[in-house]
Length: 174
Image (cartoon, rainbow, N blue to C red; front, side, top):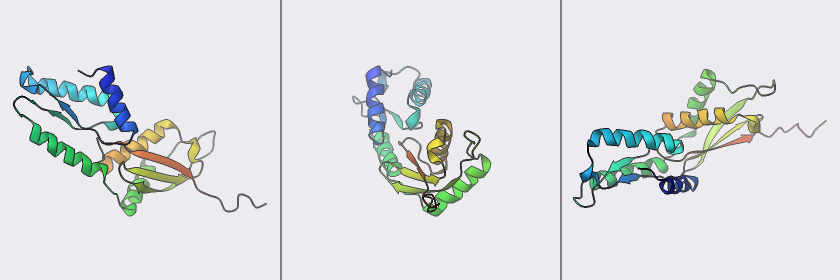
């Protein structure tokens, strides 16, 4: 059901920062539709983890089945794509996340993350400031991204997270 070209198009859409809704056509011909949509959902989440939870809507162009649900899904995903999260809510979530699972020490040195803010929407883009941000492992980055998606209902849309080093005003002084 997901050809290589379909996955490449979906990946291009997410790399461009756009929201994605997949419409599965010819649903009037599907055998065991409940089982089939579950299989397609699992496959989509496995093959496109960067937009896990994106809407997958069965439609039939011939009968018009599912077109209302398709438009509902488009409007809902657009709301998520344009969502603005207040900085205070972000930092409360961030403090709880860091308390539950602090960043790992790299080369024996602790990484201290200070705060997070939302830089823009369309797609939701967040910036985290802290010491040695460039040394944060990719696995911890994914942990932060998945936490953002779950806490603020950003499933199904590409979320960008930039890690920035805070400036030390005494770094150049001797």
